[in-house]
Length: 235
Image (cartoon, rainbow, N blue to C red; front, top):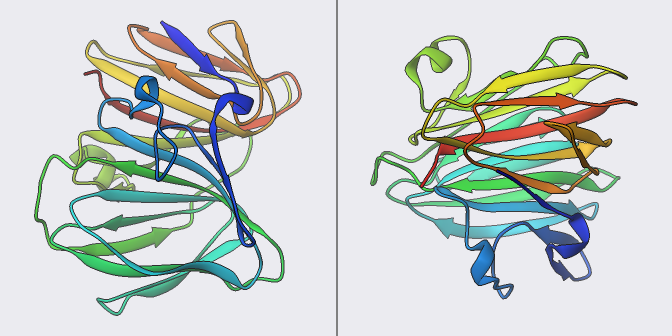
């Protein structure tokens, strides 16, 4: 089953520095039909104004993935980590037993990002943070950015304390990619840029696509697109 969730139907929030759309219930937005997707709890589509951002605040027992679509974000946390993650790259924070962090746009242009939260399978782990640059060329297929699988981590993916994987691709005009979903696996995907078809169904940029009981996904774009996909256990 492929459930397409048009961008216009997502939850929304806006103030003087943040323009956000929510794929799942978050903050004051509540939709009982969209209270997460298995262990995928949050997928926020955020635009952060220049020289603003998320002031220091705490988390615990959550895997928090930030995929930068445009611009850059500067991370600082209570463990002394500091770093800049730029467009096309990803950072992972393990909240574990507790961490306080800030995510600030120190650039002169808006930063656009996906903020993705996944419930961990391992609780009360040592908190931590990493970021990494990944290849973003067309014609290279889906890249695994972060994963709870040992083989993916050994191949260079950032580690997750969850039975999940975060993948991304940049597709040229007319390009297709496929992704197999073994029995018991589900996926949620969004194209931050460009339209695509998923198993023949048209999907516009920034729509959400929830996938269950599909053994394989074929994703095709006529004019070029970018794609972020989270694979999790079907629950």
